[in-house]
View 1 (cartoon, one colour):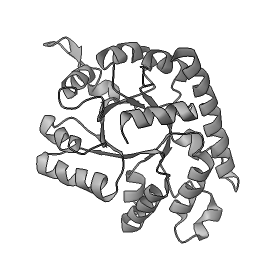
View 2 (cartoon, one colour):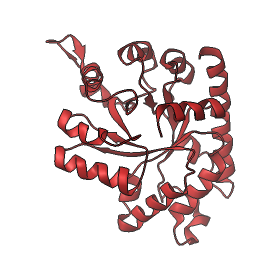
View 3 (cartoon, helix red, strand yellow):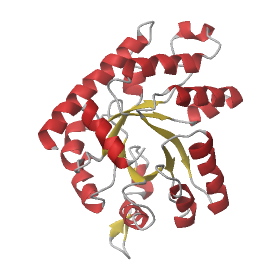
View 4 (cartoon, helix red, strand yellow):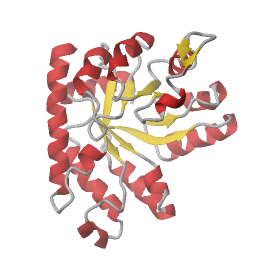
Length: 272
């Protein structure tokens, strides 16, 4: 999916919501455990309940890999079940030396056929560029994440260059990819920085985790983070998929997604 197609979907649905499928078999409703593949059954019902309110899904591969080969099968079935109209991000946080990155890229872009993959930039250019060589596929590069530990390195200012590490990552990465194939992960738990972040990367999309369970400020990050293509995919995982824990879990997830979509429609009308 290219940038224009993604923006068209955002406009059509009046939503820039990404639903994170961080499906923990220990948290899914007990009545699903009788199914042959309870993880996929949970995801299937979540997707059916939320697909009208979101433009993207983000399965976190760790939750599937932890279950071995059976979990990988659940992941594959989930990705195939997501409608073609939706942008699919594999949240795998890969990144290694060139030949290894090529294999990761092939696994997710050619075999799994996802639209985007989260990538860690720590090993530098040759660990990232192999992911950028696929038509209409995207790298979602970790820059300023939503977790508490982002303070340890990402916000640390390098005296020699007078900028924080995340700023250097964002500036340098724009030499490797374009706004058509490179996004940045920028946490909603840093809403005060979104005006500055948008100035660093005016044209790029941002994947924004941290709204919902982590308490990110949707209005603030939208006000300062929008660009002419909207430029934001705001992810909510636990706040949607675990909105309910009984037999009506899917309905509760749909209601949570609808509420966020309604807020997003208002913000798009107000700021875009």
